[in-house]
Image (tube, rainbow, N blue to C red; front, side, top):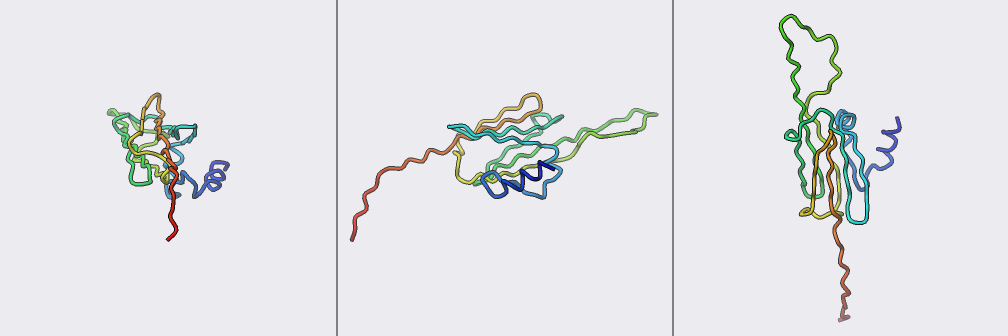
Length: 133
């Protein structure tokens, strides 16, 4: 209940996601932190292998894709009675705006948590003299 409240509260600013990804919301729980130099995304991906994760920056969007195609191979004479494990392809899209630099993105994956660090763009406000004509 509170997850949806917080999602709606931050809808539209600055790290919005697509609402049609309910399954991905449930599977890829995300925390976004900010410090002086960067934004840090921590995305839970239990059971996912590092080689099955893709991170793409497309303009002002961060796209994270994870595949979990774990086959539950049954031996002869076995039958599956219960399966609560999540399989499939999951994606999250975050609108970032122009708050970060594309060439300074770092990612690591440890203990089922993907950590993405996006360094903030440095805005240089150089004094400009405007002549009146």
